[in-house]
Image (cartoon, rainbow, N blue to C red; front, side, top):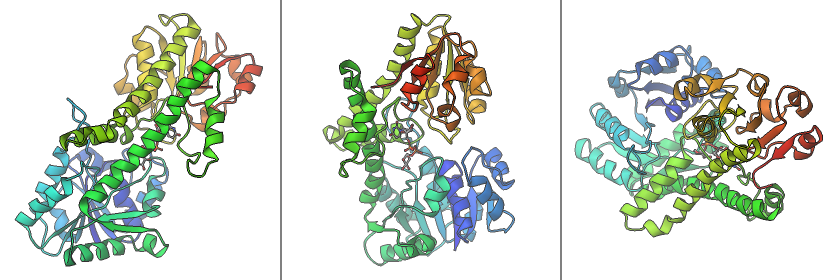
Length: 435
Ligand code: UDX
């Protein structure tokens, strides 16, 4: 199929490359010339395992190209809109200006029979509004909404082998045709038995935000239990194991620690809450405000633990392990690690941070931090070591060897990713979160 992907950020670049990998003819479009130059050279503008290989294999075949020229969409029949919907600067809502601009440009070039497919995470009601816009400009073009559930670090495999496909389509023949076309786009996944849920626009939009709201709630639930565990002497990791054996609960996404960050969960729950308030149903999801607060409180807890262990923060040398919001990513958006490191430094600590992928991104964002290429260099001479992003490079550290590098053997395990017994046996004061 001939496909265009509008927006070559995280979602769009992965989608474009994955669609070409599946054998489609794909053009990726973005207004950012630097990003397009990198992608055209087969280089992703961010770290994502598996993406360089997919870009390298698809680009020389001619099946995948990138351009800033919007008129290139006229050579395609299916147009995916994958631009960002960040949080607005002055509130919780989603900023829709990139979506609106993408549709305005797209509608100048579409032709009768084309299918537009929204992939961006949007406030419920957006697709219906955009469908009216499309109909007013080009009545022979159909809009579908097809949310994306990919996880950073697994983005290519999640796109090629999704655990479900959701199509929000209009009623009637045009909607049936849209679903058929999407089944052709995702032919390999459909043939492999991936569940396909065909529904209306509003449901498809809500599936995405409610899935993220549920995941965020699960994490904040276990972090709330960690708060209780801290004042009772209970161990939240054992608690999670025990309740996780109940198949109705499940153990995944029950890891207590510094909580969730990244470009999706935090802004999506805030935007959902803001949209519910607009709809007069703020109370229905008011618990999400609490989910957000619990999540942010965990960062404060880590700062307080460092202060407690070091007897203050001014002049204290802290080695911070991790900057990205999660391992196997260089993404610093809403990263608990970067936030905690900066708060420690702003309170007067001398913070040296390391991360296998995110140092270059962090240099621009956090001039108050020192950076070290390796974990060993980050912790050398430290009064307190704080592990915040559970990269294997950090969780696999030998407590005996690291003990020889630091000034004081105190470690705060912000992800409950270490074995407390092994670290204590090596003479460390070990503090986890909720254990
Ligand atoms: C998430 C959703 O998983 C994905 O389906 C959606 O499309 C986009 O948002 P992502 O942001 O890539 O994906 O990361 P994810 O693996 O879900 O982790 C989110 C955050 O939660 C990370 O900061 C992670 O460290 C944290 N987390 C996850 C926990 O604190 N505890 C857990 O048990 C699991």
